[in-house]
Image 1 (cartoon, helix red, strand yellow):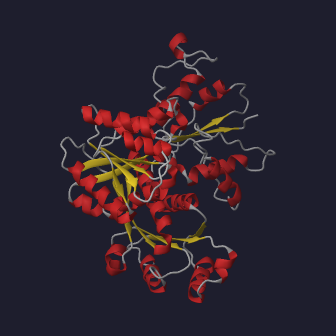
Image 2 (spheres, one colour):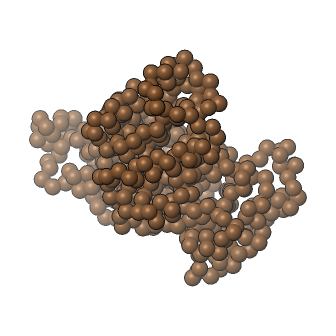
Length: 462
């Protein structure tokens, strides 16, 4: 199986189009696989600059150069790094010095480019850009780019031996934007899960081949807005019968309802209102409200954790969360939001601080967060206890003694165990020959660079 990785770039105004390309990638996934192709997307929002000292422009360019092709979309404005980095990437492609083999620069036919975007377009050679109008043309351009790259030599082998979690998603047409954002979430999560030997194969529910979709899917997911035309009572009845028979798929089923304002809720068709109320009040399986794409992503991660959590090996030294924990959804929601920084305002991310009187459950709140969303931290979850220590350096050194959920000491996980002598101060091992807290911190940052994002939990900070 050959991998084709395509970098998708645009300004924020074209986020729906970027998400639509994620949807297309999953819709055509089976067709690509029959041709021996594993098509993967990379996007700027997948690149996490929070744990690196590099300039984010360098990360942006580096990510482009690790792909087989670049597709860049314009409508009215230029993206923050677009012009300079795209010029460098195309130059590297033409010089044959990187993995890049093709690029596609598209301007929306119905756009009104500002002076910067218009200037960039006029600087491009004839034939080096084109236009598109509407989703059908964008789809055709994307598939043509895949075909072009597929004919190139020296495609890399796709990672093998991944455990596949099959899932289907049912959503009415009114939720196309949410469906596309959900597809983008799955592609992003797959990049993280691949480092743990897992991959979600998401299919979209087709009423014309319902039995085949249900038979081949371990997980089932349904999104509802103001109707249930695509996946209604009959389909739910089939699902409930299948859930009672553990030998059949799907093994689990999760339902997500979009939050509705009071006026919209009053105007709901009576049939759908009854259908919706039945889920909220009677269904034992997990129904959830979602207000935006991020809330939907979090809900999906919680669902994935419920179904496949035991099979997802994430290194963690965080104490086990209490099974008696209940409620506090508002606090958890606020904590999750703090890990979704505005990249313009907080380019290096945020460091959330939880304060409160002793015994009010601050540590337990973080443990719940870490256990629910650990899929987002494939590099690991590390807890450093600051109680009775005077410096952060001491806390990092103490972290080396902790053991993870799978019995591996932090020192061994970070490659700092064998033959290393610990110091008592902030001196660096390069000058003193003794480990310092800075060495531990740097090792965690290196792990973030190689294994994916890391969550560091400093407990009992005073």
